[in-house]
Image (tube, rainbow, N blue to C red):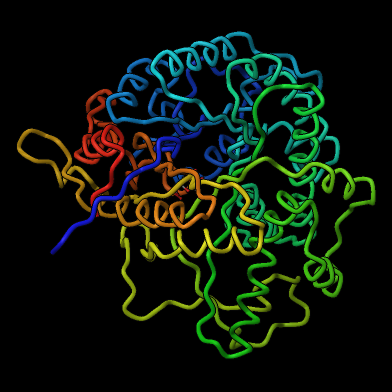
Length: 468
Ligand code: BGP
């Protein structure tokens, strides 16, 4: 088979991502600093994997220097992670900084910069303080929006002179979808009103933080990281197309449009009203969203979503759920990552790039996450103990190629970040699925070891060339 060599532009990001809670561990955490994820993990012990969970995670908080050296060895140009809101402050009302935790971030940022790796920091990767969920109902409360702005203010004051690329949220739709739409996670409450209220308050919080950053005159940008699902209808029949369009409104455009265009799609507002979904918003809030679109979006892309028109009738007394309008559909013969149960379809990258060009005026974006979680990866170790993850190399190659192709065709896709830099704790199943370029050996004091893919990534990064 013939190969082609694709040049990677000098300014194209070749990075990897992680988050605070999924890596740091609880070392040094003070009483009262639990996040929503900590609370969930304490309620639902079944999500721990063989006793391994967030308590130690990868112990990044103690081992970040070792990990930054590995980032350099793996050729990362950028590293994306979050600051854990629940730990950055000791008092959420008055935004009192936990100096010990803040000093660790100072040192981490310095270490990254000293090694030529650009930090990209997110203010919330599911790390809403549990106390704010208990006291105010979390993102259901307008007061929590204000507390988030106070937190952002402290973060920027401390680090915005050295970190220039900021993000408000990672996948802001996820927690309330699992908790309030699908009632799959603690506190298991089907409540579509709360779901939409959380969506709106996170959109408002993004706009307010963008406004704050600009008012204070910092150099740099504020974006947000979304997970719009590339959604395909089962067929071109009108009822399937309609199912996909409505799915897109509820799960994708509900965040994409406010972030980029500064407004909700009128069709979404009309559907919410039609189904009597009750959410509190006013003209002032909509004006704040309108005035403060983000500078860029990171997009997490894993797999395609396929939908068809629903085949069953909706019980009129059931609370409204967007699934009133669609059903999931599995493509026969699809390629699968069976560990995670996700379809593999690299065309989602090209299709997302086209969408950003055609519907969002070629707005700047990059792949903020893409990757492959594999169970029991130790079975792929060679005699020397190195994981031979050729499947990951193929997966990255196929998706990165689409991103580069889009970039070369004038679409505004500016980079690729792998999920994840190291194996880490997934909110869904702790350490079961391994995503890293770097193995974390849980049985051996969390020893780090580069996988085959890490050496390969380094080569691609150094040569700025992808062979396909
Ligand atoms: C994304 C999250 C990450 C990460 C990843 C992998 O949605 O932003 O935090 O966990 O998915 O998915 P999972 O951990 O569910 O396998």
